[in-house]
Image (cartoon, rainbow, N blue to C red; front, side, top):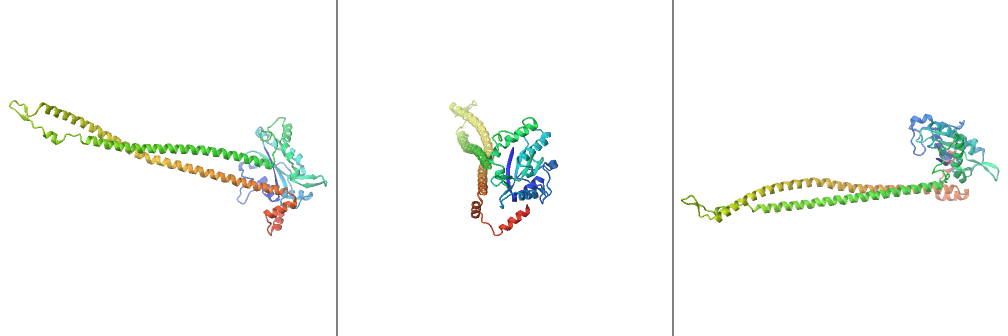
Length: 397
């Protein structure tokens, strides 16, 4: 619900513009990270902190000059709490919630250190950006100094949500849901947050990889089934051709031959009877006639069967391009899934490298000045114009 961050001078300018809803050279509102801004609601934004005569940057410079601060470009001169409105409160309670949150944070970090407290109503969830200069007491020297590490300690991060919840509950007279499963154990350190995010991303990648593997297995199974279906159709086609050939061979030799008919020579006697034709000849002739009739019927049926088989063969030929196209489409999808998986893996590795670099930079920033400068000179050798660049940074403040 609440997130804490600290910034050096170089990062402040961009944040000030985001808080104030300044626009870039293209007329677009300057964003913090990749959040979307609903321009129709920007007029609902407001600042709960007093306006400074020289602006936010001028106030930070002035406050830092009033206390002790190390002359280093990487010193964190500003810290920020981003507190999001809980889901349990109603829209007409937003103003009360943010005003009480501002009072709580002002008391916690000192009203004299408050840079700004902009409430943004034009993003996905209403929230407040409470920015302050991290001024704390140096107990050894009994003087005020700028130290983000001491101004917000690890213990402060762990107790923040509980303290805010008690304060808001007294103001509202009820629990408004400041504490939830994510905040009940207190704010985590930056390192713990990064580890948690990395573990979550790894779990998501693992789950996605498992889903991809299942999808790939399903595609491969479908491809095998389609291949089997194509092979079956090919086998049926071969069988149909053989059956057609066999039928043609069977019926090809079953017609009555000319010699069989000319062999019979009937002669009429005086009584009008047939001479030289035996009963056996007549029976054979009848038998042959019946056979011829049956063969003709069988031939007609065979021709019809051949026609049907030919139509089936044509239909199967028409189906084969479609099945072949499905097979190729399935293979393309499997390849595409494999490439997407490799792309996601590369993105994750790049993100991990960026986080490692950021952790290294933060670890170097916390080293004593002599050790830090030694490490920085090894990893980041300073260019000739380094001092000129520091002077420009101070002018931008």
